[in-house]
Length: 145
Image (cartoon, rainbow, N blue to C red):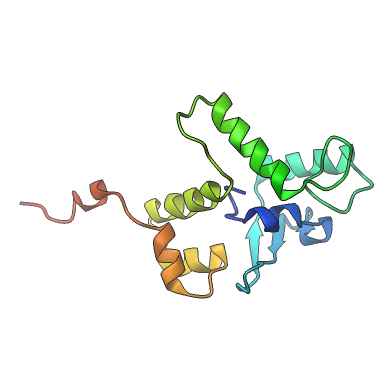
């Protein structure tokens, strides 16, 4: 969810037909009428996905419960909240924070806002701008006296 900036509903609805393990890409469908996108999958993701495919060969969904059924949004919210607690965070976290973190990460890398807009599947650039607020230290090298 972090690397691809997907919403909870998009994550739990991901099916194997959206994944091309040979080409290493994920065909993303956005739930809020955003344009679909094709995201590259890297080595660690590909290895993890292949392992899930081996462990749960009969399910059409990527995210599955221990019983092999599809995860539901509520379960994902609980997993993310629990991960934050285990990590020692002093505030509760929720899955949409991962989407925001993706936007912030890409913006801080210097990725163009329009590219981030496409990556996150936003119809309107003003939605992307909220995800890409820059920290003040980004301005320190604007002027050299």
